[in-house]
Length: 445
Image 1: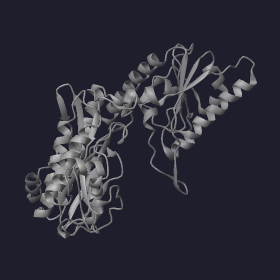
Image 2 (image 1 turned 45 degrees about the vertical axis):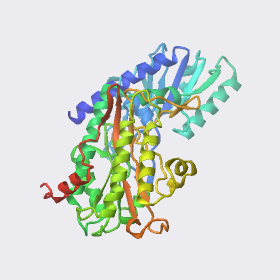
Image 3 (image 1 turned 135 degrees about the vertical axis):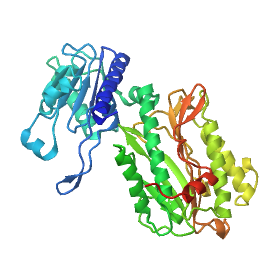
């Protein structure tokens, strides 16, 4: 599918999401959300702009300085956009804008106005509505601005009565985003395929003397060639850098005996892939590396097997943790039995993070893990990661020297289906023998 076709599909998909939300909130309510602002990097250079996921999910609109109003049953239509007007001088420098005409013709808005008209239009947009849905914590400055405007309307009187209740839009919207449609799953499957290709290219490119940033560049080249971008800052940690969970310096030279941990994923039309693989820099695991790696791989497989519809959301973590603890005890890195080690949290010296998180438009995607204080049940259409790891700090006195400075994590993206787990990231090898075989092959040209 071409980029143009992808964009059109995204806009149509946003319309489906918007109409679904409108049905959920009903004609006595109005929802207002804004695109997050551009952020300055330095002087006259901004960070690359990405619309916040909630706004993109409901509008498909990717420009900054935009506000969406969803008001079911409104006389001028349920969907209004406030956007930047066309400006030929500005567009010469920063690219074309949709403008108000484009917001209607290309993005399905029932009405569109210049962004400067929003404040004057707000009273009319909320008139007669009992409930205002507003995002919380997504765009704090805008959310505060609306709260102050509602207080102002209330104090003015003159018939401009604001909605009696303000409700977080996050809950209904994020529950919508949590369960993916077939179209969204197809996008995530493609993101996983390209992410997998990037990881295998990095394995091919790796050898002692290569730098971490060169492997990151290899991944990013694969993503870019497929028309994608990285979904989050790529982690390439060699040797003891692999023990730093969110290491992103990617500055070290990779040495002969290092394990290399890469955590990286591509973003496809706003949807993330998220893969971690760990492999030996020289193409061969040592016996100590293999011993720890086999434990993490078994934990990864156990976590995936636990990804069953109806299982509690923490089932993958519990399954993986048991395997990790048993393995650490078997190797002599921990003493006691499984129950006592888990109860005392002694394992957290080597495994200090959760095993899973939801995945979607955000790499750590939205949606509540618990409902009414209990772990929610996994449902078909949810996508989550399974990413157990073991990390032996270089100064870890509890571990024999052969294990110190090793960081190992194996992460896959798993779709929950009625028929069991569907591993979206199965295209990239993770069994030790398969990794060694791949790395022994000549890098493809």
